[in-house]
Image 1 (cartoon, one colour):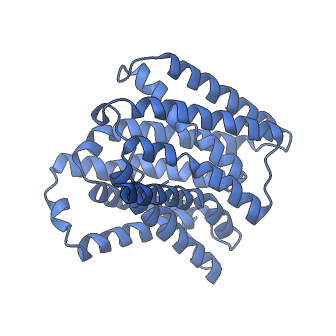
Image 2 (image 1 turned 135 degrees about the vertical axis):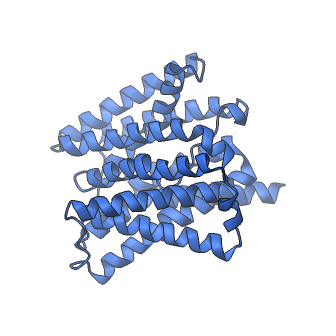
Length: 309
């Protein structure tokens, strides 16, 4: 059991690192003439292809065929509408903001999910929830105030916070279907739906332009699909099976820390004192709500399906 727990912890930390590297991979791809539309279309097309290949190679196509039509359609629709919008907002914001700053903006979503669940009557309000909201709000103000001194991009900020809001809605909508569909079928259908929407959207907007992409740029696109999508998903669920939802959720809080560290190492991005303090408050708020969620039965507090970060 101790070996299983240790392995599960490592899997969860590796998943957080893989998801945390996503913003850095995206920035590196942009430096190699990859447009936002090309990145989105390529990332999800490659991820969907890899997931379908895994389904076929492991003989698990029957799991998809056995799904109720309504659940299959809902999972596909989550990718078509929900995850494509979240990913689109995130990578459009990444084109305008530092990866480290964006990671802190987006990582307000766990607190938003808790607050929204209370507002919808799915969860009971508690003192811990109120404290978490106060911490997250104060932290966000500090993050934005610190960034404002460096000419904060307004549109990028709106897109980053919009990505957090859309992901919140995605989690709340997917709660029911996530309890009925396995992780692999759900991730496969969500990524397929997102690939369709983002591919057609990039084509319609004239932003699907793979021609100028360098060999290095193509490599970063593969890294996004293989490491920060398929690999990260697989590692997360492998860890989840071994350590349980509460520990897996808390360990995943390392994700923005990884992004900040990698962005500093690769691009020299440095958060100011106010931003660091704000980021610490946001992470403290996330830990507060996740510890509270971890104390309730899993049926009343499902983890979001990390179909793509």
